[in-house]
Length: 487
Image 1 (cartoon, rainbow, N blue to C red):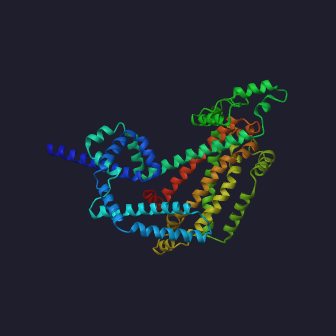
Image 2: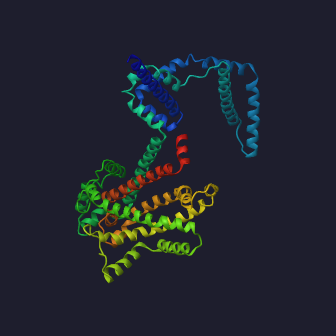
Image 3: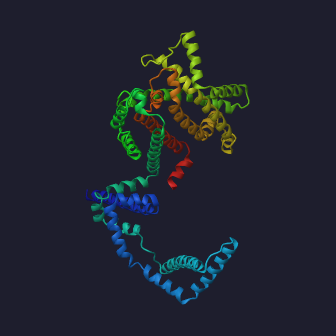
């Protein structure tokens, strides 16, 4: 029993030792990264202050000062500085003659001294490092000090609470997949802030006057001024921008100018309709486009290939609004098969909008699938798979299509974002009360809170989709996973 307890304690001690070693290694690695270095310092400020003070104290005795003094003495006793000064002066004169520059004697001396001092300091650093290496030592770094301290159980124990955020970011940085996701989400935040700033600036500079458009031509100046005061339109640009960005971050965009509706609640009610329409169109496009593209690549220049690529080209060329009107004219008015307008209670009413919205995506994915697969099936590894005796089905699905998915996934991600942004035309044609038509209705006022909310939350969705696409890259391609572990 005692032996089992001892073995368990040793195993726990070993795991803790590995954890401490990994944290120390990641700490040193993050210090080399300019951006993460500041994040690390801020999140673990109490711990880093202790480490910094101990490091500064111990560095005086690490041999660097003595080695530097020896290197300086070595440079002083030799004629290195005088020779270097002559070389620097000669190079400066050559440079001035080549560029036909005229400089005063005082300016020439100043440039010489700057260049000379920079070169001397570089040489001094190299000689100091060489002397330390000959002595079998190296300069003490802050990472070394942290490693020494965290190896002590008492320091690690008391540092957990004040350094919990720092240890969290160390754990995040140590996992390449979590780090990859975190960096993409962080980039998404900056993209959304940029979109919010750009959209608000365009609306702010718009010649339209929200107060005059809503109150009408008979509105007096006092009424317009009161309207602007109520909605904060009389405040400076930066104040309005900050209030709108803060509202986006807190999911509180206030009231719309027209109708005095709660913008967040309205968007939450309308956005699912647009998202549902886009998702169904995407699934429909993938079910149709992927098999067509693969078969066209397997049988290039056949009647099947020519027929479906011609249809795909037509699908890319047809405007959504015209296709929607033709569908309504034929399937609703003439044949009376499908309802002309959208009705949430009738699932048949979503058939035509999804087909119209997904036509362009189907055509784009089919053409990309064909070209990408056609490029891959002539690679050496596909020929090797065939030579190994694998069936054509195994060769295509396991080796060809899998390696052709990267550009296809890219196109799907981009096109899906375009569908969300371009759904307004389809929604208008089929009288769908979605987010796209909502933004179009509000932009001519312009109803700033409503437009900001619609555009920003669409941008958030597209950014999340892009993150998902980046993660799919790693899932599909092992080379992407290996790069994620390296950087």
